[in-house]
Image (cartoon, rainbow, N blue to C red):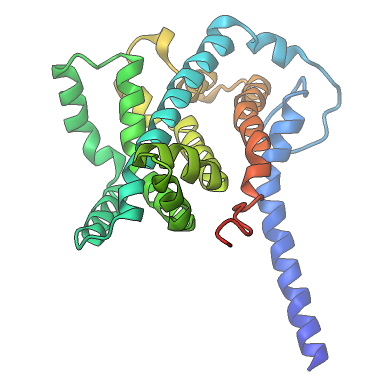
Length: 275
């Protein structure tokens, strides 16, 4: 039996190692190719070291403006998503009703709808209300597309905050909105962090929505402008593409680092409802 367990564990470790290698190869290609003067599709150690790939892309048209547009779109969409999700999840978590479950199942169904199936009516609607080719219109659609799953996540985290804490605040004269802002949300820091990171990452890597709703090149985010590195007849500037990918990934990594402590902190409720 010990030998069988050891062999099974060894086989599982080998499989996990193989999967890790498969996932690590694209990352290794990006890291190595961004400083390779002769980068191609092969994963190899560069025969030379250069920063020319970064010098070529660090211009307003190629990097700075698209990244700024991405930060505006994703930052605005994430903020709107978190606020609306908190306001929607609070009554679902605190007030019991026979309609809660059907409502949650309905918004969960909304997350399964393919984005390509709803873009045609959304495009027509945006044209009629003059939101096409506007950053604010794209922000609204980003928030609307992420809101259903964000409400689910927020509601589950909000259920972990004891209701007794709010009742104590109500006794002192606090309103429901004040108890939400001052009691519930500070105690569910990990939940806010998860919703924030999830929403931002999903928006940051979205290509199709801004490609359809934005028409002016100066308003295109980095997720769309990265397509410019793929030239005609299969010609690709691999080194510049890898350098742009490194810079493009930096905001997401920084966001995760900033909220990592919240993600692993758990709820600070020890002893809060005692006495």
